[in-house]
Length: 207
Length: 87
Image (cartoon, rainbow over all chains, first blue to last red; front, top):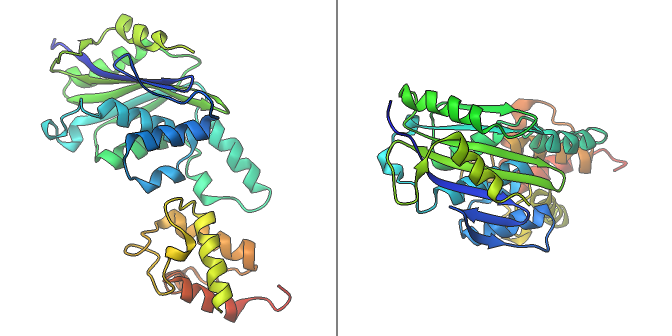
């Protein structure tokens, strides 16, 4: 069985962005939309579609951009090699409720398109031209063991060569993202892709 | 027509959440889709909602969409020709 590593991680929680366990951005006195916008500005990427995303997609997209920044060598992979497996507890309920509000007047097409949780995966894939296997699971709470088993199976069986996986959850002002870049090749930041290491990174930045 | 065009530009920026674009940056004859503003299919649906919401106009046929939504000016011409008299 080949070794599999967590070669990068990004946790966004309690108004702070952590990359490989180091704080890379903080904006404590902002509500969630303001915080997400400030974190986007901090990346210094021009991507106008960001403004149109719902909060779940913005959070996942920001976590993925930080995760991949300076750590991911895109040229090492074909688009089909890169997959995304995400999970959360509140599905797309945050966008669902906002869409429901508009139904009373004029239903908003741009809100409607975000009323599925896996749209966040699409946004990450569109930005990076990833075309590999993807899945989104809804659990009551973060399940590191499931993520480890599911992603390991995809990588060991060569369905994917690398995978972005983890948790992206938003409901109102409550949110958390914890993404992991999984690769077969190690690097100086890497740790083994184990349930324990996934849980350690996830829990380290609980607000 | 000039006021209608100016109103439309502001409504497009608001409705489509174009935070990087000011209404005055949009040219009257600038293509809204592909080139120009680069709007997408979801934006097209939002423009249809905009016509209904602000001008009480329903597009007569989906086939008219590309012609009506080609530029801000073509939108303004369509609104002028189809706006109910009491709006």
